[in-house]
Length: 108
Image (cartoon, rainbow, N blue to C red; front, side):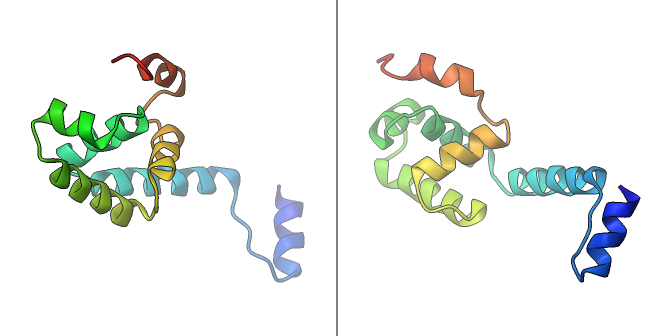
């Protein structure tokens, strides 16, 4: 690792050890998730599970416009632009389990 680091720095590139990169990734994940309210986290999970705005609004007893407000807050806070990206984020950061997602589709 040391030799690779020296070569990268000598070539004008940056080098991060795998341990530091992992630590930074975990810290970023935690700080992103800490920004979310409990309700935003609920909506994130439900969207990642493939539930529609209408279904989410019924289950949480919210107006569909309110659910959309939460969606757009999530887009802003997590720097994503679609439900697909929200679902990807949720899987990537362990908010939902990828294996369990197929169990939730079409269960209504």
